[in-house]
Length: 475
Ligand code: UDX
Ligand code: UDX
Image 1 (cartoon, rainbow, N blue to C red):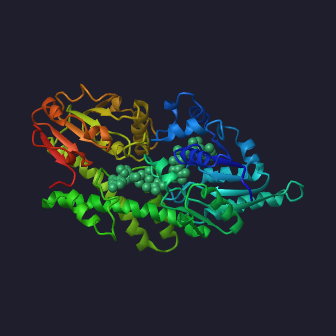
Image 2: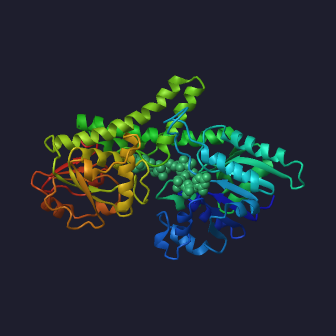
Image 3: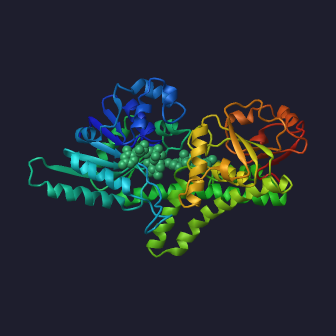
């Protein structure tokens, strides 16, 4: 099958960069990204590329090359579905907030909605590709919805048919463009060999054949969950080791180096931090646990659940460390927070450990100044109030009215440290490691602490710093 027209439903962190790279590498294919959110589409279409809805290194250049050449952003979902030979589904798949499986199972409402739209508007034969991370066997749900529509239309002359593939995304935010241009592997699962080969041919425009893995549908869906669970497990493992290092006088950087030198283990994903965040790890593990319990494997579920429990405990431990070192109280103490994104090089704050940590410091009565190079004040406000609303069962909540603590936002890194009781590094932005820490240590109070939850200060000479320093995993 020859693909001339691709449609991607969902112009988010996955759909946007993935389609941009496909359009860049396949000039002969027209790629339309559609989304129900018109604000998001408008931002993708803005002339000023600094206003794209997501920040990702290298993305602007690709958008500049491809937009309105063979990459288009639109809210006209019906039209682009009807013209597409191949449709990627890249909508968000949040955890269910109520009903059966609440707090664990994935809410497939948007997937169902998209399937119904596709069933209604698609024409001829269309390949449907699951890009979103989904529970195993979701392809069956999509198939059932599509087949029902085909049957009901069989009296018409306008016959339609579908092939469903799973093609999970492994991109990591902050390095998404590189991950897409030079992927470790592309995974394609399906039952229809022609459809699989059609998608393989698209990727072969830039990915070597030996990096394209084809499997059955269910293996592909499950592999994505398992890859994320393994990655999250490594982060929890090294964070647990960091606590042990702090207790024993070992140094987690040295332990990571020694352990990672074993080629069987490898040296990636061994950096301790404030706990993992991002849209995927927590959701995918919850979903995996739900699956295990559903299939009568509670011991397997509980094994994976501990990865999450450790992550929660680890964040609480960081808050306790800060409170204890500041003499058991934060009331009216000025604390500078460096970083709010869940990791460096992204403006994404979904499940960022900063949300929980900042929330707790505010509840202890601290006065915070929060800096992040890419996350804006409005986003921080939304995240903090949504976090509290969830805890208060959806009642509106505002810190300034109800809490002892307060926070303000700073877009700059100067003039914010003077007389601070503490500085807390939460995101591994490079700009924080190149700050003049000697100067900062002179500006903060004599008894102040610098809490480095990312180990950034391991790279600098600390001898001339006139302040107390706590570095994660550094006993
Ligand atoms: C991704 C993955 O696709 C998802 O599986 C994963 O679990 C989270 O990360 P992402 O691109 O990061 O999703 O999500 P997001 O940035 O929220 O983008 C999803 C987009 O889909 C939104 O812009 C939303 O408006 C759009 N959408 C959602 C639709 O266009 N139609 C719908 O019916 C629902
Ligand atoms: C992840 C997966 O890596 C990607 O393959 C999948 O498609 C989506 O989920 P992402 O969430 O963008 O990507 O970021 P990732 O680099 O995996 O980091 C996740 C979290 O783990 C971040 O909070 C990060 O700071 C943390 N982390 C990562 C550590 O604390 N230490 C590490 O060594 C690595």
